[in-house]
Amino acid sequence: MALRKLLCVALFVIASASLGPGGTANQAFSVVLKFYLQQQFGVNELGMVPAARSPVQGTNTGFGQEVVYEFTVTAGKSPQSKVLGYVRGTAIVVNNTAASTTFFVQNVIHYDNGNVRGTLSQQGEAIFSSVPWEYAITGGTGVFRNAYGFNVGRFISSTPTPNGNLITTYYEASVFLDR
Image (cartoon, rainbow, N blue to C red; front, side, top):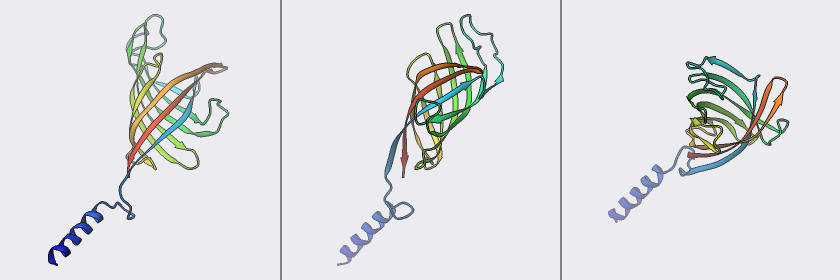
């Protein structure tokens, strides 16, 4: 009888330890966020650090050049579609050849679709002339607290505007959370 009671207590302790705050078992959770980034160059970015080396012939950016930016996140490809948030961050030219320019990108996605709200931190290198490019998701806040995953982007369009160019890119962010 004592062994049976001890076994019951042991099972209770194991079951209790597996419960997270709020009394539910910890479970992995994942979601794929799909969105468009409306990048209005000539308006919503600012050159912070000039290039350490001049641009290579046939390119527009020099090694070491850094920009800080804020761009709009939308549900559809049109800039007039539902706004889901914005992306703020920096991009630094870390390699520049006539064939391509590599950027180190570090930013925060502020996301709110009405049901899901929070931020995602991401970083990585990208060659925007090579599709697709990918960033590592390295954390988050709100519903994305302690998030990890990856975000894959691709070019959609570039449209001249009176102030520069509107570049539209599409992203699918695979976000994982341990709950």
